[in-house]
Length: 324
Image (tube, rainbow, N blue to C red):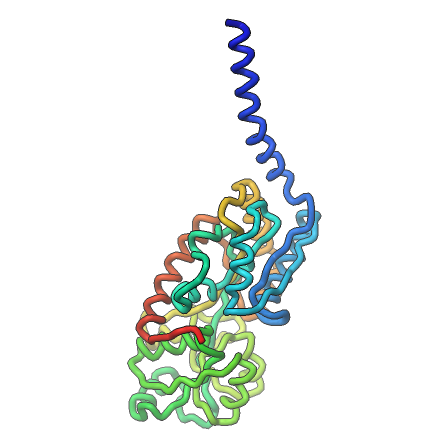
């Protein structure tokens, strides 16, 4: 009987030890450098946000968090690389609104973003701004809507490309305001803005970070911001929703990891990211990007992503948008 009991304890200990070992390793995290994959080229808003957070996490956790750019396919290449990575917390994804949009834009992805990536922590939300060439007579959103309805199919709406934030923000406006604008897709805001400033196009729903310099220089006239409230960087510009009830559009980014990543690691990263979002200096850097801190628990972030994905799936389907 005593022998059986000793054997039972021995076997039980053998079963428990691996679990304890995994928990201990997770709680000691990180013990080596961590990669954060970004699905776009260096220098853009998503890359800048990732590098700000990587530096913060490096300083706080004592190991290097290294940003690795894997551009291509609207961020799908980087996302799939993280989905296939070992779920040990050492390969992370700078997830963004593009991941949610891509779920509908692309028909044959090799992964399911919502099911294959576990949300760890949201970082920021970034606004867009409805802006027009100063030669246009409209000085408010209401005046623009009246002008557009009087001139259906005669106003060019520039975008940063098919499925980009400016494209989707504009399509949502067209649906909700009931106006007929001609969509003109470019390869990025940098390509679209010269034609908007030059007068070939009349309106754009650009991300704030790309256009704020032109707005301040008087080259573009802002009519409304895409968020539900005013922005610190454009305090005199009202929300589009003041004129089109219910209109709201913004992009976001945050940290994700392969499904199966230990809960203890997720907790550590969420805690440290949220600490950055209340730090005055870090918040100031986000403001420079035309963004605001966006703090959530992992479960809140997951719920937000699911609702965001569904909202924009409806817009994308109604507008008949397909990835190029």
